[in-house]
Image (tube, rainbow, N blue to C red; front, side, top):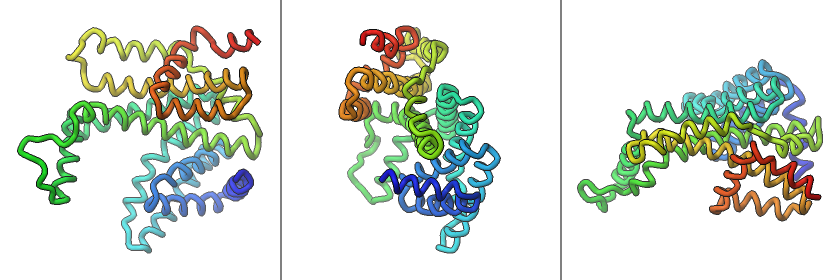
Length: 301
């Protein structure tokens, strides 16, 4: 797999036309299999990281243009391809920022801001009532299927789930941007700086200011109780996801120091993403700005 990925990235980085061609094929394939979009975003990211913002944007626009042509020839509409730019322009932005600052902290904070922007846009689209919007979407889906199981005034979607879906969506958008950026950074390191991406990620420190900003956002919820605006818990989901990443970096580094076994590291990632341990890892990320777990465990050797 490593050799295959390396050959793929070397091909992408061979020239502007190679990058555009790969981007166009990946973008076209994304319409059929959406997860491929992560690879497309990562290609945009690696070109930008290595060759600069201008070259990254040229490759992005050229690739999208070619994908539009392919889609049109297959009877589709160009707009469905153009909409992909909504996802890949943020990746280009944070990759350009990372190239300029050489700071994952700044890049991740910028990605979180894109998550906040997506949240605000969604609130505008739903007229400030996202929970009702989700209920209507689910009801419309059942209506299109001709379902007569829904009684008058009955809600198919649990109201508690409807209230958190918007925050989950925004946090997922942010996490997707981070995933594409890290994939691009790992590809860059594979060709030009072996092992560099791992060192960079494991030393991630978001800082006290990021923690305090989240606490300020949380304050209305503590003071207002049930009267807190719906957007506050949604913003907190983005903030918690940001510090979950910080916690993963800290826990990964500590496990490397104490065990050196990849099995424990893989278990950490699985448990963080799919079990309640993720909350503990997030709290490790939040408190690390003051405690510095990596230094303390290193001193215990």
